[in-house]
Image (cartoon, rainbow, N blue to C red; front, side, top):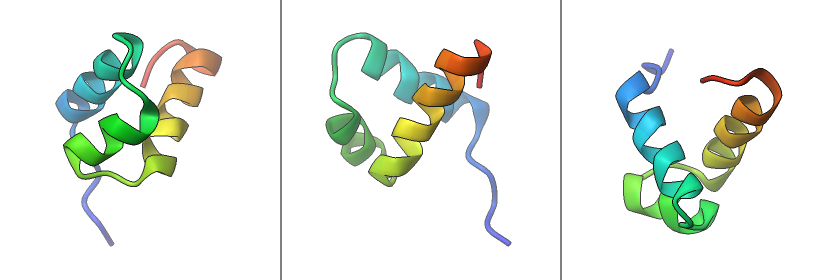
Length: 50
């Protein structure tokens, strides 16, 4: 099983997206799949936190 991403990484990616960086660019900058960045942002929108 793969190790989960750290909370710190999640917060940095989300801060970049909220700061105006595209999901695509943030994912590439942090070495993630685009779907991961989109999923995290969707989770924040729906639940209010990662």
